[in-house]
Amino acid sequence: MLKEINSPKDLKKISRLNLPFLAEEVREEIIKTVAQNGGHLASNLGVVELTIALHYVFNLPDDKIIWDVGHQSYTHKLLTGRFKNFHTLRQHNGIAGFPKVTESKFDSFTTGHSSTSISAACGIAAAAKLTQKKSKTIAVIGDGSLTGGMAYEALNQVGILKKNLVVILNDNDMSISKNVGSLSSFLSRTLSSKYLQGMRNKFGNFLKSLPKIGKDAYSFMKRTEESFKAFVTPGMLFEAFNLDYFGPIDGHNLDHLIDILYNIKELDDPILLHIKTKKGKGFKFAEDDPVYFHGVSSFEYKENNKKKEEDKKDSTPTYTEIFGKTIEELAEKDNTIVAITAAMPEGTGLSNFSKKFPERFFDVGIAEQHGVTFAAGLAISSFKPVVAIYSTFIQRAYDQIVHDVCIESLPVVFAIDRAGIVGEDGVTHQGLFDISFLRCLPNIVIMAPKDENELKRMLISSFTYNLPVAVRYPRGQGVGVKIDNNSKPLEIGKAEIVKEGEKYLILSIGSSVYECLKATTLLKEKNIDPCVVNARFIKPLDENLIISLAKKFPIIITVEEHSIMGGFGSAVLECLQKNGVTNSKVYRIGIDDKFVEHGNQTVLREKYKLDAKGIAEFFLDLKI
Image (cartoon, rainbow, N blue to C red; front, side):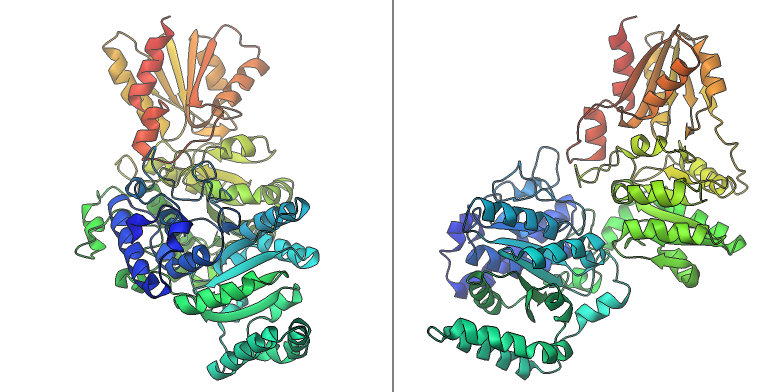
């Protein structure tokens, strides 16, 4: 059936009796493709029936579905004309792993970060009302995303404006990591009596069916049941926001989903439908380990063996692993070191830390803003917090970094993982802006290691500066250098010359340093022999070294895996201008003023000429 579906109109032609078989086909296609390409598996398998039901009942693209986070949109893509190209999922020039408005008219909103769906849906619903369109707007949000405060800001407006909007809460007891705090427990409660819930729904449907008085009778019942409902359903919170609450219902029962969605479709008031689903549904290994299969690399699907992927791994540790191990070692010696993450203990390398030092580990949920200010509170109380967040997600906490950390120069360490080109997750996840928006802040120190050993040194150094510190490092494995067991702190703002040379000076930062060194090997064949500097510090720059070298080298090239707008190269230009150095011609290599699409990291680095070959070609193109 799946190959015959080119749009939701084709889906509507299928008998409801056959929809469960379609769901099996969808799961098979998703598992097969993710096994080949990698991707978000468990979350997509959990919403197969919900997605089928939504497309079966509502009329896309006139009606709009906004997927919170967006990594559960694979079924949506399969049902909206992208089956034939689904094998290109997350590949360069292929289908994106997240909703993307430029990819399909059925993608209502480009999403990649959490807790944004209700806000976007509220805006779309308001626009529909202003233009007098009779359309439905549906926001699908997971229970994990409700740990983000933005979702509640949006719910507050939905209830006040009373837009024609449906919020579907996908409650699977599991976000990227197990939810923390009282909210998870609150949402996970079910009716104490299935019989009572069934009678309530039947009686409500009966009242609505009564001619003339049905709507009034139903409204009266809703009002009188509120005090009782508070005790038997989890809907009290949403009723307080003036949303009509329905549920919880089984999110894998297509008949129940379709029936209730048809009912909701006829209501004009803002609705919250609470469904219960199982993350990884239909694939035993994903059901048993939804954290591992949340975002997974390719694996041997036929053998259903996730260890196959692990067996192929190089023994070289990842930067994330080095970070986690180093923080553990430091925490063993210093009981004032605490670790904070925003629902990503596994992804940021803090899982072992959480087991070793549970009282000094804090998972704040998907609430980066709160996490940073929470860290500031710890820092002002003489603790040494390290906040581990991906580059793309730390953007969400910028105001807190400015006001709550940097103004008072509090010693919070920001471990910025996935800095630079991230890869297949694409435009919303590339970490290409953190240097620009951080280096303009007074008091903060910004570093980027050339390899895994230097990362360890930088982390050790961070706790000695008594300042806000950001250490940015890339996704993936290190370069394979030996890890020094007796690493010493780095002198603040001190760069190093890693290769002597003549005529050309390369100033590089982070993972680009080794690519620059490889490029010099290629350039040697053309009798070009640049000097290479590992800047180490983006802020403060080693101005003395840069100025002294600039007087010797007429041509300077800066290299960074970051936007060149306001990045490391811009800092070098500012340094030279401030110190009156005018004899050198400066060129910058980095990402131009654009967003970077999804694709393999190696492919993207080659495309944007950030690999050794591209850097060498840049030199040859200068023709000086």
